[in-house]
Image (cartoon, rainbow, N blue to C red; front, side, top):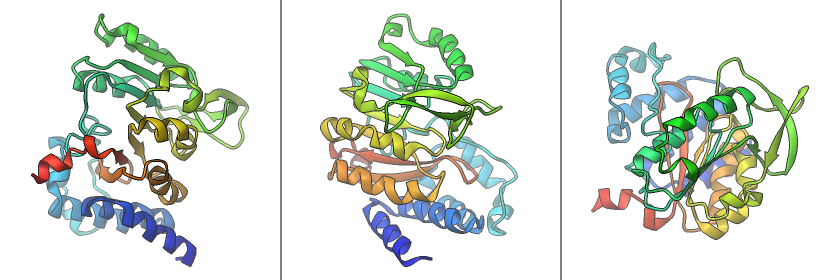
Length: 289
């Protein structure tokens, strides 16, 4: 490994607040560097055998239990399962409160925003959902009906992506919903905005970012909001090496008292989430007590 990258890996590793976070981070880093699935397999096996309390979903636990041979042989698990229920809102990591202002970057079908509404028992102040994909935007519009009538007016759906600039960027549509992303070149462009420049996001208390490898740019576009408001941040962190090496450092620079945790929500290589949690919202304190 290049010495400069080695130093950056060590710096990020030291910022993570517990052993499961360091385990997941290391697995993703070395997988991104080498492309060797063995690193993910070892991470999944250790996570299941030594840190089972971090696996919240019965579906995940069941999948791991029935794939012990695959885990032991360090090969991909036959059953790919994702823990959608706890992903981004892990109650062992973060506390949710009342009057929350939730920013959903990469809303896809509004399922994450709907989960947030459910978990806060409709006590939130506002939900701001960003979704630039025209197909997903239509799905989001249709699914607004699933929010309670009394809170529907508190949900703001924007047809733009989150980035570090205001303007337009090349965009590639995916056949499967949720796989579309900003790219270097494309015949299609989408509107993008910095979170810092969206008035409805000014008092954010919770920012979720899952935008297929462009999470770092979205965070850069939210610098002022994060530094000023100190929201909880839940960001997908597994798509590429640069975000793994940069996102933890950036979050600590913006808010030095953030506590950083990493959790994994699938039986595969995807769905690792980095949480940046202000001390007063850190749920691990109550678990330690």
